[in-house]
Length: 571
Image 1: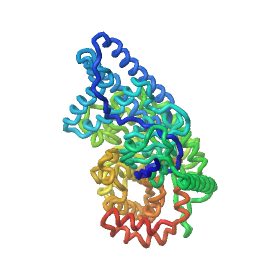
Image 2: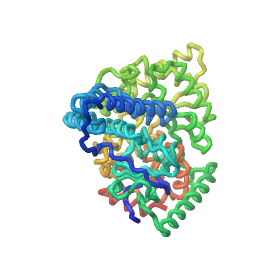
Image 3: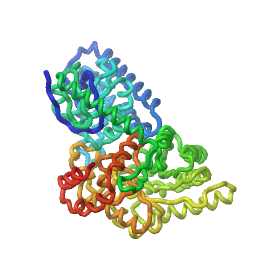
Image 4: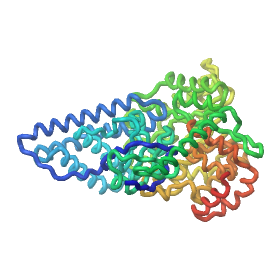
């Protein structure tokens, strides 16, 4: 029977396919008892399921590369560690062996036990780890039933579930899933960001999806508007086909912009850089006419079993410089938290709250030898093309001056060793800690350029975890405090003639282009996959008009007022 579900569009695009339901990770399993004689067989079922899930995660890890390897790999690694955790598996085995429970019900009981333990912890970070437990339990439950957690099957399937992990997205798409509908989730979560990078339509917050959708139902998914039509009628299908035609027409129009300037209607050129992490990203950025690489992530080099040496890093940075053929490459120094660094020996100690702990420049300065190795590799690569150094998680002038002193010493050492290096290597700071935004006048003279990381800046400014779906409405770039802080940072940078780009997710959303232009932004840095959409949006804007209307934007007292301004000023 036809029904329309309303959710939130998290990744644009339209899809038509048959529904494939996946049970929520918090299992609803009836109590199941077994005979003592069946214990060994039930344990064998459990161990076989563990082997299946472990093989799935290893296979996915091997297929990932570049940005996905970094973003998704950490989740896979966490789930792999949980799968091997004796507390999880021994508990399930004991429930089967001593309680004579079936493996399905033992999974649920052990999940609920662990959830109670995590929920009682004082630290919010560890309380949230139950999500990882749920994903692992969900995979095990699917393997026990010979039902794939990752939805193998005929192309044209729409996954309907409670939530989807970032570690699943690439695998789902490769197996024929054309769209995803979730009852929970946030349009600003890691999963949503990755879905947009993969151009995989995603609707989140469709609360009644699991109650109203049946396995095999035909679904028409609108990832822009957030609507999901169950068993669409003729009129729905006409609307779907019209949207698909519009999408194709839009893609063709965008393709024509590959060699066009990013110029406003009143003739102002806006510079668009690309965020990158892999050779594929660099090649795409070059082909789309990016002004350069505005943020090259280096974390993937540090995610292996051993730390990368100078030569390995040098080759990676050199190849980016060569790939951009004379365009500026901005290399961000290591930005990794202690919660992810312990497997390579980077972490100094366990931390109660890694999000507010030893990460970014703090970790680099604490591990001076590792930081010097990275800096030497970057400086050596500067001989092959214009390179800038970008320092993440800056909170004070002392951090920037310490990095500047190291850069100066490394340049002197390499020059004396006979290396050909650039005469000047610009040094920049990321503004993602509110303290840095507030204290900017006191250290802006110590940097050559600035880059605003809106993902963390918004998170810290609003005290709202962007991956916590309960805070989805609170975590938003359309908050008066966010806009006023951005405007202040941009104004200070322009007054001091320091180039400034916004490199967070906000820059990659073309809907926000009029707003950022009105605030004075002239440089964007974003994933190459959305570069042409942003160029199209910029070319439709009149910069002078937007700047004249900026005071009204900054007077807005709430999100509704900002949305009203944005609606009125979007071409």
